[in-house]
Structure formats: structure tokens, C-alpha cells
Length: 471
Image (cartoon, rainbow, N blue to C red; front, side, top):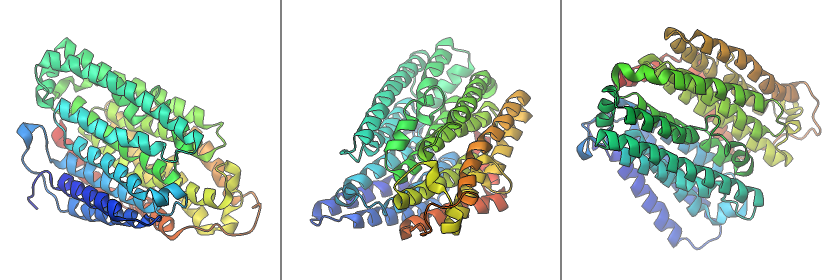
């Protein structure tokens, strides 16, 4: 349907105000109903996003609602809806008493993601990044009486602040050379061979590296993932990173023309070290959340393989990979949350005998791990196959070889958890009790990876359609 390009942003802002005033009007200690209000609002916006069609640019071309923006916004909204729903099961007092604050911060960050997906101006892009990032620092330390949570949030904030400073420093070079903040103008300046634009974009790339948690900009990831609330980490591990990749497409690909191949060596090198470092650092981990944190770094490397292809096919496959990754990674974290609630531990040993105690939960975790590992025929298999195929089309056979070999390495630590679940005996026979909202969230993620594994064509073709105009 034809609508205002700001329809989702206006709708989300209205939802924010509704939750804000409902929080002010509530006097009872248990404010979980505010989470339900936020969930239904985001779910409604997700449905609205399915009806949107591209519109003309707004704000003098600074804000666009094109195919890429619509695709990305649907992904952000769906991931946030699952993240909010899974978080409703959290029993800790702060999530009951301060539920309004928690969900307002999530909605604020989501608003930043929505604006970021449509930003075609350097200033708007940076402001959107900060709107997305600042609430995340507060959410990481939301359990403020937990010293580990506060320390992790502080690390997240300090590294994030430095990365933002580096990004804006690089973008200042771009503005100085291009004499415009429009991404269209900066793309033309880069295509014309302006050396300061190239220098500025290289510096800014370090800031982007933090946002997507690529090596060596990953320092905040393990501690933050381990200490923060698991439903929040499930969302943090996918949605902000997806937003970072969409911004990379805008800045480094859109309108650049043939000079897009200049970024190939940089992104190929970064992809290699990120895959290598993420997988090797995951091998010795015994805390499942830290293991999935390092695994996530490796997955960023696989996404960078598609980015290194610097083509419409590579960009489309990155978008498909992001969809598969949202369902697979969030699902794995949510199963970890269920087991942790039951066993009181995030250690790999907490999964011992899970298949005997809760066979459906163990099956769900196995499928999520197989998807993350790239085993046929779940979503992750097609995701890795497609990014490797896109890289091979550009002659990056060595990069495909590195990725394929390290995929085998990743299977070792994924199957270690599977071994605990299916081969080792349980410490106690009682089944793992899963809260209804958490169970529904796991099922939604499971449906996502299985459906994409059986029939990936629909999302692949949609991704190809939105990626083609970038080149």
C-alpha cells in the first residue's frame, strides 16, 4: 500500500508514548502487563510492515523507504517481538517492578534501527546509530545490583563510545572531501576517486566493526553476553548487528559503482580473521552463553564473506543469512535461558541428559545448533552455502576454503552440547519446566529455521530484489 515513509517510525513513537504513560499510571509492583502492551504493539507494527511498498524519498533524500529498508525493518520488528515475548518470563524483581523502563529502552533502540535502515545522510545515520546504541548500554546493566552485569555494561559503554568517536571522526573526512552529508553525494565523491573520502570511510569502518562485533572490535561481546539477561542477549546478538550490516550496504555499496571492488580486500581480510578468531576462541568455552558469544563473532565473519563479494548476489545472501541467523541464534539463547532457569547454571554440563528429561526442548536446541553449524537441511545450511557461492562468483575461492574448513571446526563445539544432551546421562530425572511465553518464542524460532530450511526460495528471491538496486 502507498503510505507515509515514516509510518513505522510514527507508529513506534506512538507505542512508546502509550507504554510511557501506562507506566506512569501504574501503581502496582508487578508491571509485566506493560511488556504485553509493548509486544502486541510491535507485533501489530510487524503486520503493518508486511503491507508496505517503496515510496519516494523524504527529507530531501535523507530518508528513504525502499526495498532494502522495508526488508530490514520487517526483520528488526520480528526479532524485537520475539525478544519482548521471551523476556516476559523473566522472574527477577527488576523485570517486574521496572518493566516499563525495560521495554521503553527496547522500543527506543528499535526506533533507532528503523531510522538507520532508511538513513541516506551521514548525520541522520550517526544519530540513528546512537539512538540504537545508547539504550543497549542501559539494558546490558539493567540488573544493576549484579556487579558482573554493571561491569559488562560499563565495558560495553566505554568501547561503544570510543567506536562512535572513531566513526564520526572518519565521517568528518568524508564530509570535508565531499562537501555534503548526503550518501548519494559521498558515493559520487568516492566514485570520482577522492582520496580523503577513501581515508574517511576506512576510519569509519572501524566504528562499524564495533557495531557488528567483528574481530578485533569484539572485546565487549563475551562479558556482556554472559552477564546480561539472556532474553535481552538473544535480541542483542542479532538485531543491532543486522542494523549495522544494512548501514554498511548504504555507506559502502549504494551508488559507488565500479569502485565498490576497492572494499573487497579489506572485507575479505576482516572476514578471515573474524571467522578464525571467533571459532578458535569458542573451542575452550564451558559457559554456553560465552560459547554462543564467540560463535556469534564467527558468524559475523561468514556474513563478511558475503559482503566481501561486493555484488548484488553477495548482498542478497547476507540478507538471507541475517534472517536465518535471527531465528537460529535467538532460539539457541532462549533454550539456554530455559535450561538455566531450571538448573541454575549456564555451564555446558547443565545440558547433560536433556534429551531424556525434555526431549522436545533438546530437539529444538539440536536443530538450532545444526542451523548455526550449517548442516543440511535447516536454514543455516542454505545461508552459508549461499554466501560461499556469492564469494566464489567473485573469484574468492581461498576465502570460501577458509570458511568451509572453519565451519568444520565450529561443528566441534556445537556437537559438544549435542553430546551432553543425547549421550550423557542426566544428573536428575525431572523435566525442564519452560514458561509459556518462552516456549512460544522457542517455537517461533524453530518454525523459522525449519521453514527456511525446507523452502528458502521465497526469502532468497525477496533479498535479491532489494539488493539489485544497490549496484
